[in-house]
Image (cartoon, rainbow, N blue to C red):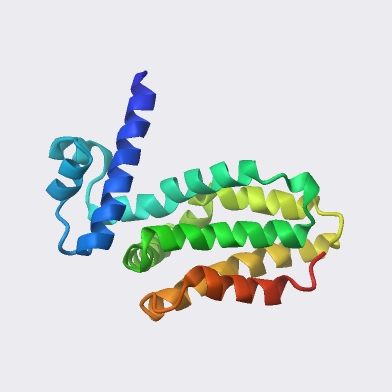
Length: 192
């Protein structure tokens, strides 16, 4: 394994360990040393990759989310699906990721990413690279007028974030995938 692959593997182990421990113990109760030990790396190695727990949480919602979504998007054969079915599948995948990482991580990620976006405007959109793939798919659609494509993309992104935010406000009391799928189906009903 070369150095770049080793770095990626270490980051993924740290992501996985952080997710497990944050969901098991809570973010405040989880110490950086706990994450490092769970990932079988030194605390120093953690700090090579991340400055803080807040940074790993933000990275979970950018790097890990992008990796998860790109992997899943590749498995969806866009040519065999209409836009409605494609967007529903993508939306459900996003909600499954939120469910996987948990409500506390999702809440803290929203808070951190909103705060960062206040000082670095557009940061969120730049870091969510898988969203660009969704936009490209919408733009290639022949079932929508060209001026409506941007509207559909913005509405879709807003609905997904709204579902996640509502789930966070309700402290994860309802199943985000079931709740979100029902809302997405209602929204996407007019898209072919």
